[in-house]
Length: 175
Image (tube, rainbow, N blue to C red):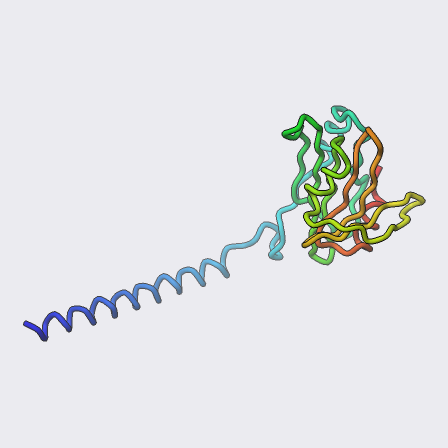
């Protein structure tokens, strides 16, 4: 009997290893055979023009959005809503031509709060002039940003993993 029970334990482990290998093969096949949203492994593009037009009508501040995205860029998320403190918040998430993340974040909340919420660990990093307008450069723990406070009418934060040059290119499209 002692020989039987030790054989049974090895068979159970062997069966478990074989089962795990079979599941692994299925996972690998599924990973390489299921197409991504755009066929290139990137994020799924979303239309944003209708949301932008609606948000511009509803916003209590001059809301900004790209008239046309730079070549190779695509919108990946869009929203407009009041936030938890009763301020209106506009968001447009983007994938740049280089595959980096960029976003337009705009709110009529306090400028410091808008920056802190969208660029954790934000520290001043100079200024940049884009299309004749001065933007504050901010470097955070993970994201960098171009920030343009607009007094009581809203703060615009262009943020993400995109370079300052890509964020400046985004700023040039705003209207």
